[in-house]
Figure 1 (spheres, rainbow, N blue to C red):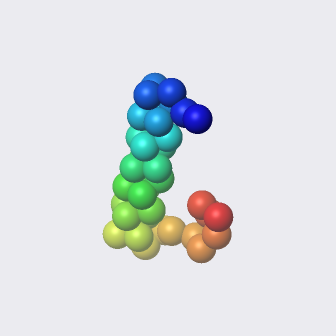
Figure 2 (cartoon, helix red, strand yellow):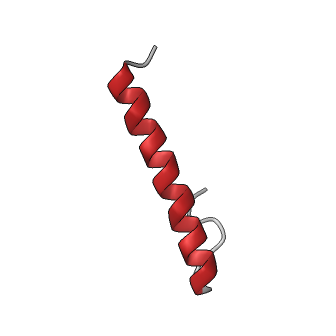
Length: 36
């Protein structure tokens, strides 16, 4: 079981990763497997 804080931290981490992938895709510098 996750605490509320842990759940929030995981959600933020996932959101940050998703945004990072979007930014890299737009910049054309995303490398497949970077977030495997």
